[in-house]
Length: 428
Image (tube, rainbow, N blue to C red; front, side, top):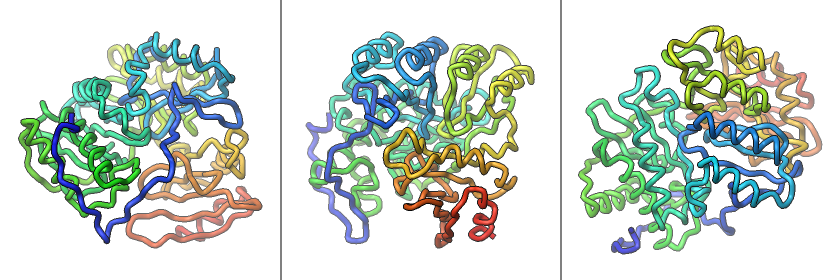
């Protein structure tokens, strides 16, 4: 436990932008429901997005029994259940517990782990991250200190291909070609290189060091980058704790990452599909479970990877496409996302999902992805370059480019049918 260690106070930097929250973290879970306009909402953490077929069947049964019947994928590979009735919390927890989805009631909101979804399936990663995932989740649930992590704190386990390295996680572990692993913190430019065997333990120590740094500084923060420390100072503190824990390490430059997930289609030992706007009907979910061999892997890009028994076939893809799931790698749906919008969210100014679907024909084959939001919070927005389409007060949408290294370009669109014109104005 880090509470037993002596840690020098970490200095704030005048160049850093520190954040101090004026309230506790209200991020929903399965034991703390959120009251939405369409009923209560539960967020079920699925570490690495990995579900057994049995757990998938239990989730869809819960959605139909207690909620609106649909399953809503998040940008962290988790599942939200919406439209839950008042007073169902006890029954919900009992059903999820029986399915093995609540291994620790005290840690249920902090099990936020994304992992390379194709790891071990296509032969392109440096290693299979499943042992890391299992070890980190078990270590998290066993850590008293980790209970204090925010429900927004994120771990990323990258098999070396760089797919989840770019997702803005608080603690990133990435396999390296030399048989080790990079341990990165927030947006810091350097990493600590550790052995593969110690990677999961090092990730937990990094998170616990963050908690101690926040306590020492007196800041109420949820994410690593909110501490506002000089570049490398938190990394140095983590290094001290790794040394104290007997974990050898050295500083190295950080490898760059991507922000794109696996395209739909057949992969070496499975199939990949995209879920339009992240919403799955019970029928679609059950078809996914029928095609899968043993497990489903939910991705941070609102997709699903299904390992299959033997070589995958085009017939499997055709079966899923018939339900409305995206199996075409050129589909415009791959570049369109949206928050829940109206009528589910009281803060939303528009039915953004209907507007996004209605304007799908205006999406060019190439270009920036679009994310539609009902208000300025832009809940669930992706990492990486994009166009933010935000409902404006009084009607219409404000479009703004969010491109690394470029100043944003903005325009107003009074009608979603004019999307093509608005996009041309800011991206040409």
